[in-house]
Amino acid sequence: MPKLAKYLGSVAVILAMGGAVHAEEVKADTVVATVNGTQITLGHMASVRESLPPQYQQLPDDVLFEGILEQLIQQTALAEIGQDMMTHRDEIALEVDRRAYLANSVLERTAGGAVTDDALKAAYEAKYANAEPTREYNAAHIIVETEEDAARIKKEIEDGLDFGEAAKQYSTDGAAPNGGDLGWFGLEAMVKPFSDALAEMKDGEVKGPVQTEFGWHVVKLMETRLAEAPTMEEVRAELEGDLRQAAVEKRVTETVEKAKVEKMTEGVDPALLKDAAILGE
Image (cartoon, rainbow, N blue to C red):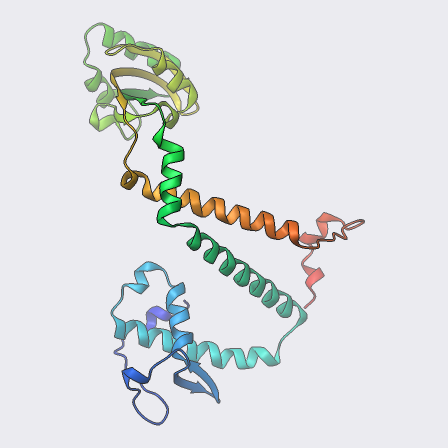
């Protein structure tokens, strides 16, 4: 929100035309200011607040109120000038923004309505109720730039150098200070060459060099275990995301399928989109 920070040190004084607004009378259409007769309402301000980044929304109420009100006063005054300067380019941009807003509002409602207790329970049972226990791996690695370096480090470990000390000394990634420890994970969490190597290893084994897109690895498998299915609470956020995504995709697909869509793109050069002149002045 441009220039909002300039006003964040101000103390708000909430006024309405004709006197103070009593809390029990306040609603979205309550007018808090006018600019050349154009009304700014509490609803306008609340809408702006909803669109702010979290760091702004956490500001004290009085500070945020004054900043938003001042911003809307500026916008309203400038919009009055802009209305008289409206071009076809502006009309196109506003229409695109309007369609995007309305489409997003439909999808937000669709996503929100998809998450119910029954839907969560069904999604959990479908994904985890009959799932076999999965194997998890506790491993460490050392990553370097060349195959020669990885081979040399593996030889040093075989000759008695502690793996963790070798990781601290040689490894180039963020796990190095912890001796290369990667913690517990499933094979699907790792890139394929790395996971393929682990799948063939025994507890305590060191293997390398193993090449991935990130470099050359020396890998140590500490131990493995069978992990039971997670609880509903452990995967609630994941399941909610899945439900929302599925509902949104279904809504988009069904809506477009039902719509009468006619494309008239024959003979239209796609490169025209790069021509700013197509929008006019």
